[in-house]
Length: 318
Image (cartoon, rainbow, N blue to C red; front, side):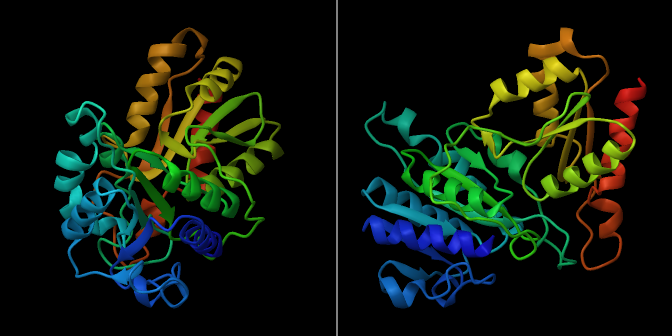
């Protein structure tokens, strides 16, 4: 998947001279080598390193976007995003409204997120819910090489700010065709069709949910797995068609359960599709505690196929 990200960045830099790529160690290829070779190919005026200041990285990107550029800012790990939230909440998502449509901020922020690699503290955070709660900022999370490339290209071309979270675990553990087309924002993907239960997930949890669906199939249970791909805007049409058909929903994400994006999904489903539900919506998520660094406790924190399978069985037995 990291190769697909790199190809998308190279394509955007090649096709639009306004595109600029920057962040901590980006000029040297980045921690995960997503920008490897791009400075040499496109020059240090367009691909460059920044100081260790996430607020500065995002703030500079906002200024560049307002000046007519197409900045792509990399935050080295999503857990380092917190110092930049002030810039994002106060500036990034507000300029179109503040200027009554005269100005927009066509900026992309990329950040690797999530666990599964036994990393240090703050390196496995999943703050997508925080960003999704900020009006004016779109949020996408790919789970395949094709979507990693296609969603990133669409994000760079979008007239408004887009936050792209990329699963660290999937960078080198998932393979597939990278695709040649941009993937529209706001369109979910049916990763596996089914009729008995709908499982909603995204990013690193898609492969987990597919494993749970495989296990359920052995017991004669048909599970539909929907890869949301886009949290903002959210594809409620695809979600609604599935929920009204199956009547049972399980939501899966890595972030802590309390106030996670699953809570918003649950509310949206209850408001729109409650008459179709045969059981309460269940959430499988991280626990309401900081993500455990290094240790084997990560296996107990990060949702796995067993926890998802148990939730599927629970909604079916309700």
